[in-house]
Image 1 (cartoon, rainbow, N blue to C red):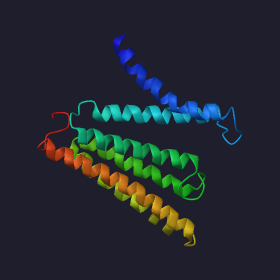
Image 2 (image 1 turned 90 degrees about the horizontal axis):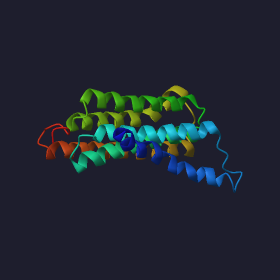
Image 3 (image 1 turned 120 degrees about the horizontal axis):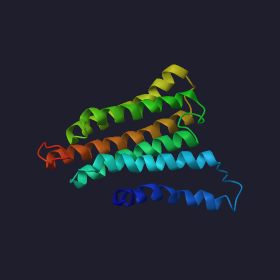
Length: 186
């Protein structure tokens, strides 16, 4: 029973931000979420919370916790934007599926690193590289004309690359502070 109570906030807290669109729907037609929109948003928020808890469950370093938090939040924002409006064109543009590869690089890297801060730094640098490559691959494969929209996409991707790099640097800092020990041993 105690374990269930300790997990209860992890189930309830993700529902709190969803009150905003629920209330907004009562006052404006501009916000029109469906039940599936609320479900997907809840799963994303709860999944991000669980991912953070899993990654930091045995971490004692503040740098490690900050790095994990930034990585998870960046991944959540990447998915949220892609589902809502898409990075490249609309959310229906198949080029946006390439961003799934970015997340796959991060998740596979974290698993292979066994959440060790050195390995996590490498995984997040690889994730930043994958993020950097997505718009380049999209330009090569779909060959859109180069216009202001392409510049916006490159700028937005650059912002996400920056966030993943900062997370990698924080993991590197955590590795230095633990003297090479795993975050779970620190």
